[in-house]
Length: 260
Length: 356
Image (cartoon, rainbow over all chains, first blue to last red; front, side):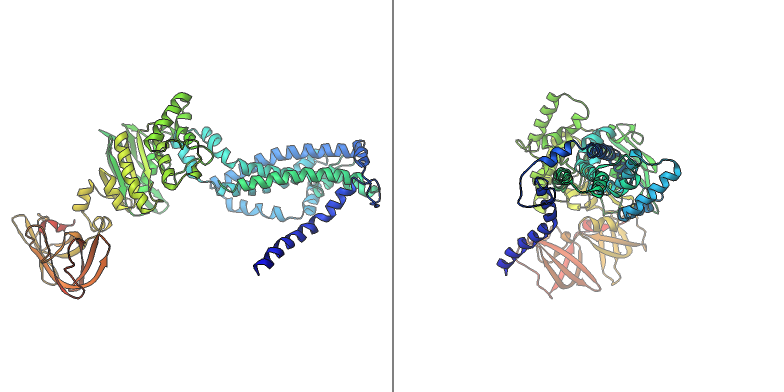
């Protein structure tokens, strides 16, 4: 029985991973294949990566995506962390409602959020463009940041701050020398999540991008509609390597975050 | 000279009065305990001194200076928390040096002080470790060293030994008392452990329902409790309720409901006919025939109903009419009492404490 389990458990997990990763791995391999139409035998060639370097639309979209993701991370982490601190440290009227209303925004379909934002921005004159995409991403990211930072705050022992204060630390010293270092893993995890959320975001960006301006996911989508080329494989390979790297860092930090 | 002066402090949480007009003064170098059941107000009082709780009324002075508007970090206090509250992201040395470092003392001075304190709490060589690498008892010592490092005016201890097992707790009590004597710092301890309060303190305040029930030296509060609450919270006690039936030569006679008369050398001033409750500690009772001190003149007879063996002592429960009286004997003689047997209990009038 025990021996059976020893074989079965890793086999089962292996199958799940295979199911998850096969299409992605095939796509990554084909980014290095000479043939445009997934033809075998495999002939190694970097021509699709070279083509990518000359595809100005894709490169510009990639630059937009990176800038939006960085600014989104800064804004949503600042606003979200302050929100999490306010929720866990202070009592105020309507707090319970506020907390309750943060939840549905996580489960609301992005299609609906995106449509609503597009109509609202049009109606209020905010319009479409990179600024509108950024606003949309920040609104989308804040609840996630609040939840990640809050879970870290819940495990935070308040008597550590009391100990710092009674030892003579000012509010500022207490924050920078005790609170911030202990919350840091949670804040960094939230930042990585907010970055990935924005960088991968398609639906909301699609609704808020005017003609001629796009982000990477939107540009990839329209490139596929025009006609597929393995350049998409090439850029996807780069994105996958990048976001896997981020997620590995995230996982390491979450583990570290286990001990407040 | 008083260091801490608490005057008529009250604190209300919603409907509950956590502190009800509490006053006390604590002297320089004194080891003072706030003892009481949980929820009695002792922690609220300690946290008011620290500044974490703001009293609704009254004043708290340290060295004659009113504290209520002084920020926590400027009160010049040290505190040990129940869960130690060591900074997990700092080394032991940085934990101990924190209070000096936030005061911008020189690196050399801080390192010197860290060394002194590590040796004071016998943790030389542990400076570079992290708190989680230390045992509970060691973390305890670090917490004490950290609190003492900035040379606080008053050391506050919030149930600091509560998380340790009994043997370690007993060792730490001795250690704590020794260090407190050595440093000479005025200390206020909050505890619900009566034995801890009696062992460590110069004076004890028993706090219940937001009020000071009694305040005095451990000997005073144990030997002369004023109320039934204090008598039963500190150790064990047998209570006898009856009517004063005689007063002569400093002796008070109390007639119990079943007709027996007991004598007390306390209780002068109680008028004949008044109803009183008297307390007698189980260890002050002796079985007739065993070696009791002096010539006891109180004597009650009954039948032994239970026996509780506790190693160093044995407690017998004796049925006297409707009442069960406990007697604790040191386990140093051949057992003179057996279950179901008739027992005659004797004790000295000086050990009959007449309660208020």
